[in-house]
Structures are given as C-alpha cells and as structure tokens.
Amino acid sequence: MPTTTQLVISGKSRPGVMAQVASVLGSAGVNIKAFSAPEVIGTGTGKLRLLVADLDGARRALKAAKIKFGEETAL
Picture (cartoon, rainbow, N blue to C red):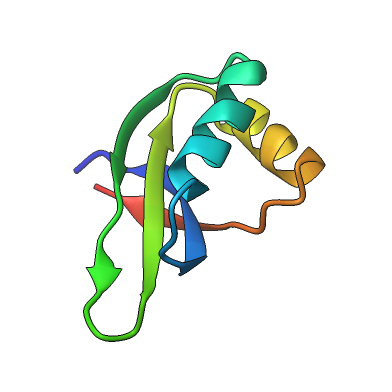
C-alpha cells in the first residue's frame, strides 16, 4: 500500500491559524493537496494535518516562519 508524509501542526484551536499556515505555504509556492483539522472537544486544542505537493519546500517555509510541526506517515 503506498504511503506519503503528512505535516502535523498541533496547538490551540483559534481563528487565523489555518490562514497563517496557508499564507506561509502559498508565499513559498507550496500547494496544499489535502488537509484535516479536527479539534478535541472540551480542550480547545487540535491538530492540523497537511498533505502538500512540495514537502521539502513546506518544511523550509514552516521553519523560516517559526511554525513548529511534526511529520507522520499517511496511507
């Protein structure tokens, strides 16, 4: 079964987080192919998971913007 790497940004669920991440990636020319952003009910926290067209470019852009992220394998 083929796999890919997804980026994971964890933190408080608040207005503007997705816009900031999309702006950083867009400015770097990185296309977001898919995303998921579930919030944990009652805690106000969540995880933004992204599949991008240019993983290395996304890594560089997020690091330059000081946005902390992790990586996971996705099917």
